[in-house]
Length: 268
View 1 (cartoon, helix red, strand yellow):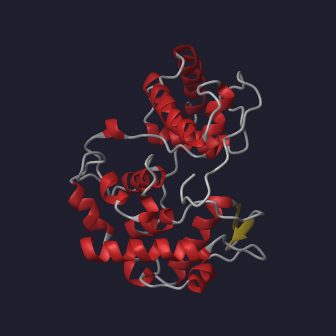
View 2 (view 1 turned 30 degrees about the vertical axis):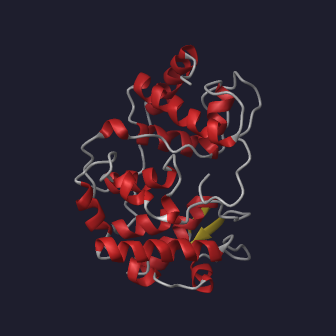
View 3 (view 1 turned 120 degrees about the horizontal axis):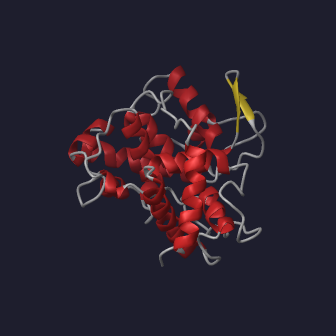
């Protein structure tokens, strides 16, 4: 269902104001394409309860903390975030990468299985190299042979709205590893932050998680077009500034929150 045109215009105007002085992240801290691939694969419901510093930087919380800890492991042992290192790794080894004081990463068993599935598939189809997957895509996001399709073959990236897959593609593109030839296929990542913003601003209506996620993605694609901002940059802007500001783009709909997650999924 298309978002209300007046709401799209109102939000787009606000987004253009916010974007005037916004610099999207460069992801320079991500050392190679495989690091982005394997960290995005387990980037869901971290379970961290408090912010923590990592090597004197931060504090980080939630997803940002997971990435900071994972990148620290890669710095300490180059190649840790590659298919050959991840193959058959036990849950204990996964958990050992992500300690934060007394805080522990939620469900390391499930994340170890996701890493193992991804490692097996990458070794079988791409020689264990993310660069080979990128090359095989021919620079396309969409279509059957594109990056999004190829990533969707792995359990970690099976989300039908491709939240994690878009995150990986965004990092690869921002770092210069992927040159996207079909930018019309970019979408925002419909996570809890963006859903809450869309609901409170009146872009979408309350409902169950699946339709709200889909409507959020579609509504922000319309906002991106109206504002003249690419969806990946809009995604960064809304996520970074909307985590602590649920009324960032308006609260015309009132105090609405994102719907509850479904049990057993590894996305939203």
